Image 1 (cartoon, rainbow, N blue to C red):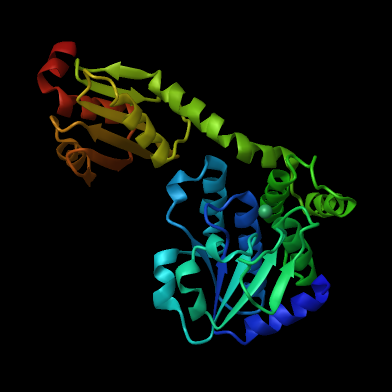
Image 2: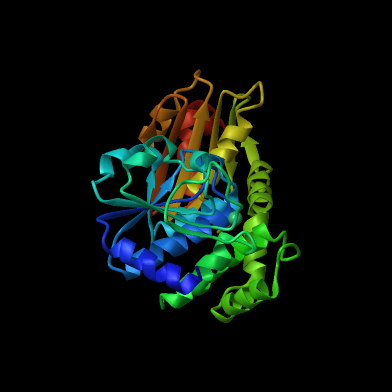
Length: 331
Ligand SMILES: [Mn+2]
C-alpha cells in the first residue's frame, strides 16, 4: 500500500474513533518522540484530540529529549501509561509509532481494549507484530520521522521550524548522523525539512545538551562558598538563566561531600525570579529555611522562588537565616 492510500484509511479511522492514543515505543528515543508529536498534529488537523502515551521514565531521558518533550507539551497532549485505561472508551484508537511489536508498546497489558490499532513503523515485522489491518511498515525507510514528514505534507499540516528540528533529530539518530540507511528519498526529506526552517546545527545541539548542561552545573558548583563548615551555598551573580532542575542538581551534587549538612543553589530562573534549591542530610531542616524565604518543601529537600529582589539581597537574607551570629561578625 502506498502512503497516500494508507493515509486515507487512517484519516477515516481517526475521524470515526472517539479517542486517539499515540504510542511511541518504550524508552522513547528522538525518532519515536518526534514521530509521535507529528502524528498528534495530524490527528488535531482532523479535529480530534490525540494523547501521546509516555512511560514513567521521563526523568531518565537525556536532556535533549527532555527539551523536546517540554516544548512539545505546548502543542501536544501527553499522558502517562497508568492514565490510559481510565480514559479508554469503547471506540478508542491506538496508533503505534516507530515500533510494531506487542511488547514494545507502553500499552501492552491492555492492547485488546482498543477498538482499533494502527501501526506506522520502519522496523521489520515478525510473529510478535501487533495484528491489525491498518499498518504501514516500511523497513526500507530510514525512520518513523521520515514517514511522518511525508504524512504531515500530505495532511497540509504546517511544519514549523521547531517541528522540522524534531523530525530531523529523529532521522539524524536513526541514520547515524545521515550516514546509514539514508537513501536519496531520505535526503529529499531532510531537504524538505530544512526548507521548512529546520537546522542541523540546532539538531546536533539536542545531542550535546547533556554535556552543555553538565558544564553549566559544574560552573555553578565552582562558585560554591562554604558559609559554615557544614553549609554550602552556590550562587551565580550573573544573569545566566537556570532551570529549577539545574539548581536542584547543583544542590544534590554538593550534598555528596561528607562534611556538608545542607546545600543551597541560587540563580535566576527567569529575568525577575530568583530560585533557591535546598538539600539537607537531615541535621538542618531546609524546609524551615525555605519557608522563611517564601517557599517550602520537606526537611531534606525544599525550594523557593523570590520576586522583586536581587541575587545579592537574597543571598544576604539566606545567609542571615543560616548563621545569624556569624553574619554579625562578618558585617
Ligand atoms: Mn526509529
